[in-house]
Image 1 (cartoon, rainbow, N blue to C red):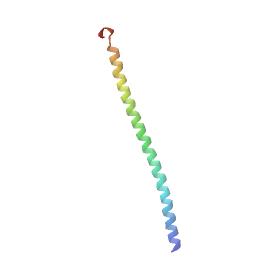
Image 2: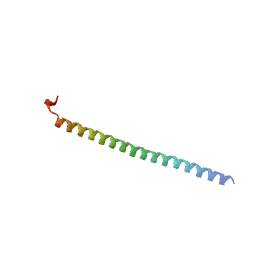
Image 3: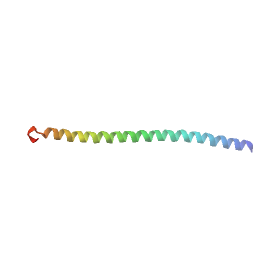
Image 4: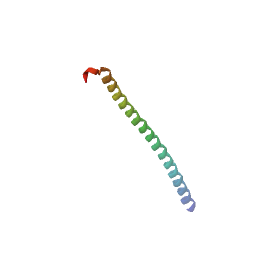
Length: 65
């Protein structure tokens, strides 16, 4: 009976460690993907605003002031 309790305890402990490692890896992957997505959105927004500013600058005339 004692051997069974020890084996089950060891099995539970190793599974717990495995789940913690797996969860940390998955969380790291999700955070990395989210960071890349946010960075791409910011870059797209900045590029769009830059294109607007360039367009306005090209059509701007000194006499319009």
